[in-house]
Image (cartoon, rainbow, N blue to C red; front, side, top):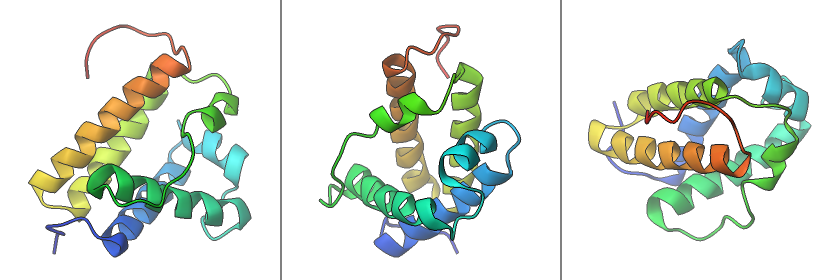
Length: 132
């Protein structure tokens, strides 16, 4: 059954499912494996996932907990393309639609799309200027 509201447990489940897909993805998985390892239960992932839970709780509910700036760590991932961000967004959208009812999923997708656009601007990712 899909979630009708954003709770810490639903965010944790969605984030874990999303990054499990990311790690298997041949296009964007290597970026994350190189930075954090290939096992979500492994060392660097533990802290990263908790940060992401807090981040999405803040983004979706306003609940405090996330501290930091999401952009700088991504500057060291290597050259990223618009297609990398589009793939990230596709996987994210698929996952939130599996976890949440349409109204909630659409809010996640809207925030993720804005975030991806901000990341591309911040990281000076070249590509066409078409909207997604």
